[in-house]
Every structure is written in C-alpha cells, then in structure tokens.
Length: 121
Image (cartoon, rainbow, N blue to C red; front, side):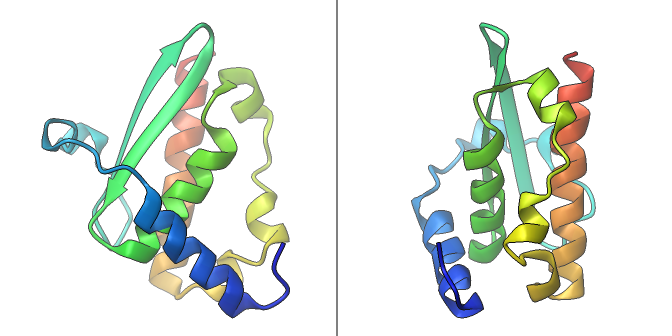
C-alpha cells in the first residue's frame, strides 16, 4: 500500500488515533500486555466461534501497532489465528523499522494474541 516507511509510520499513527478507547473498567492488570514499554491493554471476546479484540495504549504509535494487529486478526477463528505465522509484520517491514523496545513490544503483542487463540482452540 505504501512504498516509503515514513508513509507506513504515518498510517500506523492514524490507526492509533482512530482506535476506539477502551473504558477504564477494561484497563485492568490482567489485560495489560507484559513486555511493552508503553502500557497496552488487550481485551477480547468470543462470539460464534470467532475472537474479537479491542485494545488501548497510552502511546499513540503503540496504539497504532495494536490497532493494525486487531484489523488483521479480530473476527477470525482461534484456529485461523493459531495457524497464522504473522508474516505480515515482516512483509511490511514493521519490526525492522521500530526501535528495539517497540519491536519487543510488538513481539509481546503477537505472543498475547497467539496465547488467546491457543486458549480458545
């Protein structure tokens, strides 16, 4: 969709700005993703065999990253998520264009989504 990393970065920021804010009641310790420099909460529900994610963060770029992952994986079955290799992250060059701490946070987000899927197989 974008050729330049700066355009991708701006898109991620826009995704973060457009992500609906979680209510404070959903920002609990059990929904906090461990391993992120910023605070990121990931909530989910299962309906009709599909997992739907919602999230929030206190940092706009991190909020954009989790928003991107939600756009890709929310509404899929646990089997589809578990079978995913998350290669989209590599294909768009996201990991190598993030700071090491943000890249570690991205890995934590992916691991959390995978864990939720595995728990719902």
